Amino acid sequence: MSLSRVGAIAVRILKQFRHDRRTVALIVIVPLVVMALIGYLIGDSGKEQLPVAVVNLDAGVETQAGHVSLGGEIAAALGRQDQIEVHAVTSEQAAIDQVRSGDVAGALVMPADLTRRVLSGGGSVRVVVGGTDPNVQGPVLRATQAAVLSVATSAASTVGFQAPPLSVEPVSLAGGPNLSPLDYDAPILLTFFAFFLTFLLTSVSFLRERSSGTLERLMASPVSRLEVLLGYLLGFIGFAMAQALLILGYATWVLDVRIAGSIWLVLLVLVVLLVGVVNLGIALSFYARNELQVVQFMPLILVPQVFLGGLIWPVQTLWPPLRLLSQLLPLTHSTVALRAVMVGGVGFGDVAGRLLALLAFSVAMVALGVLALRKQRA
Amino acid sequence: MDANRGAAIEASGLVRTFGHLRALDGLDLSIRTGEIMGLVGPNGAGKTTFIRVVAGLLRPTDGTVRVLEHAPGRRVAADVGYMTQAAALYEDLPVLDNLLFFARLFGLPGDEAKTRAAELLDLVSLGGKERVPVRALSGGMRQLTNLACAMVHRPRLLLLDEPTVGIDPVLRLRLWDHFRELNDAGTTILVTTHVMEEAERCHRVALIGAGRAIAVGTPEELRGAARTETIEEAYLVFWNRDPNGDPS
Image 1 (cartoon, chains in turn brown, blue):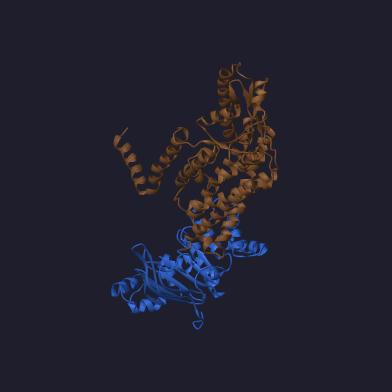
Image 2 (cartoon, chains in turn purple, brown):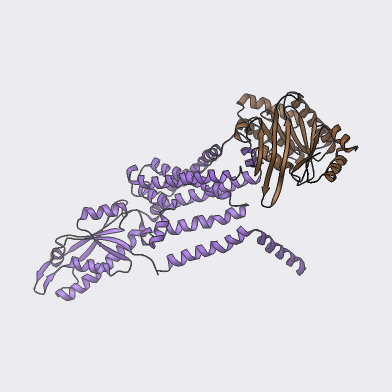
């Protein structure tokens, strides 16, 4: 054992890194970005509240103790919950529309005869949720239940009743109570792995095309930049879609995940997403000198999308600038769209907006790819 | 060779910089249609940069260059064959697939591509190796495959960047015979070389130094003007005579 030989190897590694400034920058930047996001998202501080529409139709009841309206009290109690921001809405239909569009995480509907029914033996409030995202509906349901419980307990002392029978009736616009966690998560896994594997495959292959000199050879031929990109696109979309079908097939037949909507719509969402990813891989490979740097790009590309794209935490609770950023991330849109189709069973019209966003991402990435190739003919 | 035909490549005042480095520094050179022009000079003289500019891979910083009467790039790419210094091939693909791929890029129809590939494999003595992946080939064989790929579309202008590096003398002679055949059939060839015996086989030779052509002429003319036995010695004479000025 020679310490000087060991030292020579260690020093050589440090020297190599010193000449590879991009790697050094990534070594510093990647953990900072990842830790900042984790610190922000897991720590509660600074997190925004989930918007919930409240429709209070409760007329209340005149008692000896005065006018009693449980609806108003429940609304107030819900407003006091940390995670919830109450938006008063006048009609149930308007509230449901807001849930459907994703403007609010859920809607609490209190019927006109709520107080009367409770006092005469039993009443319930309805909580309407989208039904495709457990990260959104879970907190809404829990907060509503807590608010209802606190009102029921305090009303008992005010009115002199035992805790009145007051229950929460969850209503899912799509999906339903029979769904397993896997049903909810399958769309996430599908979109995440399709993204991850396609990005890795394209960026490394294109890097090889560049480092082996064959790209230069292509560029010295009559082939145009767009032709190179389209050729890559066709080649890799084939692979990527085969992979996606494998995941989808396994999920459906082996894991018994249900796909409520059209499988063609699922595939359409994936194709539009992957067109962008292939070009992102090509464009980024120009900023990497070797495979190591490509691998280092992965956390920078994936971690923000996983954390901000609604895969783990609801987009609605993000700090507004981050929420805006999340709308620029393709996984945000593909996750929502795939969940809506696979869990919610919605049709083309309901995901058209998300498809358009993914299309915009893809077009931007094709442009980025063409620009990157321009560097090759300089 | 017909000296009356127009220039295949016409470069004038060509400058290409990389940061502070002036790889080409006012290079003037005319390559006649139908000739074999050799570029001779030390490493870093600008030979490869010039070839890359002609191939349309680098834009000149200053000066002009015309290739087959057009600006370099896609418009003339179909008529130009470019053999890179290091083999630029798809390592995982067999030799034949590499050839067929480049043939298709240059627009050869399927049958013609196959015929041409077989012809080239025979020429570069790689018959029997068509199914072998490039990564399993020796360095010399890779270089031969590389050359075959550059010639697959029968270009009017062939750019060869040190084509015979790592190739044994017997094969080198065969390749030069083939270059002569291509040339007889009308292909203009621009070839960089370190091998002086190869320079002697060119119709004309440009001695390149510090990004300029320091002398251009037939091998006999260059040796005669420098009063030397070899082109190598002639190079030194011209270099010492006028390292920075115009070729005299």
